[in-house]
Image (cartoon, rainbow, N blue to C red; front, side, top):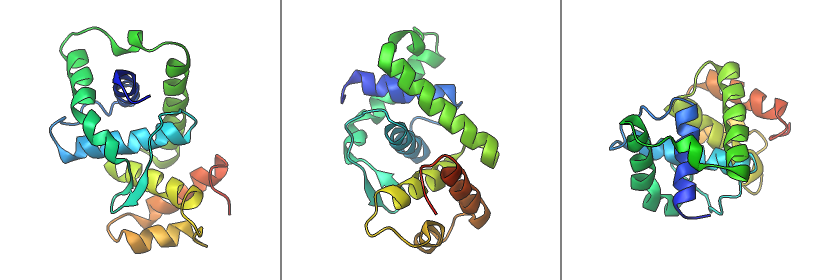
Length: 169
């Protein structure tokens, strides 16, 4: 799926969650693109991306080629261009709806979606589903790897992922 549809999918998801207000020239924007893409893929959207563990959690190198395209789609939308929702149909629209529902549920559970909560969510998802051997305590492993995150938010996020059957005890 590595084409303009991928950029539309990411941009549409960001817009639906009010994450499209992030300065598109900032590191924070690139970070949000990475984490939203990871969540999209983990909730069942076949994006064809390969994520690895990096210092800020899941990261797909190929997405570097899409930052400008996602920013362009968002900027067109912000400045009165054609609506990005209209360009997504069928499975792609269902994919966005699924991811937005999941992330809105997460938002209700933890209070807000921001850079820190996205980092914790994506990182815990990766730790409990893709890292081998699986850590005995993904929360402790995350806190060990990332000293600057909120323990309370990590624990809440873990409980959310267990409740959603993405991670297991």
